[in-house]
Length: 595
Ligand code: UTP
Ligand code: MG
Image (cartoon, rainbow, N blue to C red; front, side, top):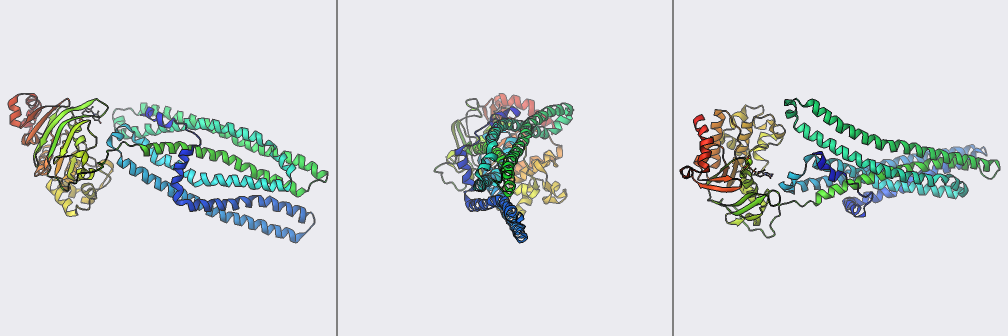
């Protein structure tokens, strides 16, 4: 929940970190050409600004004062040309710097997404989805600002300042010193502003993250909130999170509200000083009117880039913090390692063996202890046990969603750690307790865009598991658009689609985590038939809640608190009169009566 965000979002970080910057610059390297072009254009465009006051001075002193009409026309044309040139260059600058930014973040987002695909399930257990989404969207976006406007515009501001100084000092160095006399005050003010903004910025980030995570969790659980009539409380909790976010923002706005008028004030002060000092010089005949006019314009131009630089500083700071979080995600190596020298296996017969397997989700907290069993190719093994016994965990480790702590898991006699993950995934299909459907057509949800599965295969699988009837009745049939997570389909329908999906992939090994949810008798019969079809001719592990599945299994494993307590066929286990017998009496007897 919200507190999870603390660690990451509270990083104030350095405003500038050379190591991070080097890593960031690697992303713009492919587009070096753009940057060099942009910087060169910037040098030109920055010089065009101070040219205007310079031309004004010539117009006043050399032509207006001497009533030279042609000269005035000439200067007007030059001024216009300078403006035009500046606009054209500015167009290319804006276009290419934005292009640079967009291309860079496209690369970065792709890299991030590819990385999240490789991360192990263990990573997702400990990371809120909202946080990952923030990485790929907001954090990447703030880098865009750095790449598109930040890097190049900092150069532009610096060039403008340098050019103005060159023009000013070459025109009148004494007046230059007068107009720059407010600079120390401005620099001090900027320094103070930066410090305050940095602190308030962290608060804003923190509260935004809280807001996001609250929204994400509570929208996901909206139906529960509505059912329990918790809207009022929910709203009041939200309001308090929202208010904190507002307060943090207002605090940061305060500093801007003080700083910007402050800069404006300094700039006016400098102009007043110029008029006072320059005016005196003119009266004494030591200086021309044109210089005074030029200096007023120079000063106005000079303060804008200084004000902008402090904003650029903000962009830099945001980007540094974002990149730190992005790199932290990219550096996360919670992955299932591919074997260095994989054993080459083409197709599996489907023999499964567990040898003294121990497994824990966290540290030494073993949820599976010393598990050993063997399933011959083509056989069906049922696993039964109370909730939390470790049934789903057995599947999680067989498919290498998680790696085990001790022991060995073998497929066709080969340790799965020495097998390429691709081979494992090609040979095993799983149908999980809660079916996951993607938004897309039913066809795509069954075939999963696997090129080896034809449209006919999809239809045949759907027919075989008994899903065809309801699919063809849907608007659009196999092209019916499934909403996110299959929201518009019933639980039974989703189940059947997932069966069709497994069958279409025709795996050597099938794993079925039966849903406990009860369906109507008719659907129950369809599902039972579907399961029979699915299991036929392949090795399968079934976490069974249905008596029919359990009874027909070649072997039944009774799991209790992470340990195998009994193993055998239905008849053997009944004869034992142990856990299975009691379970049968309690649970399956009912089903028998029900059926
Ligand atoms: P399982 O998820 O293997 O139980 O969790 P199960 O037998 O399939 O239970 P049902 O029938 O579906 O309800 C076994 C233990 O592992 C822990 C659980 O708390 C449980 O005690 N567990 C599970 C984790 O610690 N982390 C997980 O991600 C999942
Ligand atoms: Mg389970």
